[in-house]
Image (cartoon, rainbow, N blue to C red; front, side, top):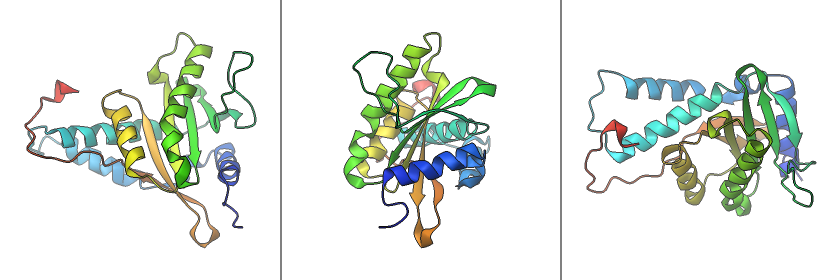
Length: 206
């Protein structure tokens, strides 16, 4: 049994990282995302706005937006307590944090086994709704989401890309690894569009 064999092990490690305010520094690959987004936004980059370009642009922008929210987080709740305001309902988010300086909430969903990744999106949407139930004057723009997983299979990649692109949510994917017994997080950008004879779209198409 390894140190990070269970989701609870990853959650405890993540809580420690957040409590020490070192989450942003722990994440690898953030600078690559920034460079990719800068290159795609450059005036020197010529394109016809095909859908695959716009989908990737939406995923990059979502990743940067969430990364910018991962400073000075306060842990509001973890999986030991339901966040539901209704008696008898059970909604156990892995981690719910608040970035007080920018008035945003950050939901963390941790998946340590392949068999559970298909549940991720329904859980995130349920938790987002409950946060908005508690904060009725907030909007989806005030709720950032982070998926921490060892794997991002096709179903999960497509679902997260859909949230970032068509639903305009802000979801950051972080690939968890414990190779050599050392835990690490690396940014993962969903890849969910195949260009098959598509025509261009105006940037306002999204």
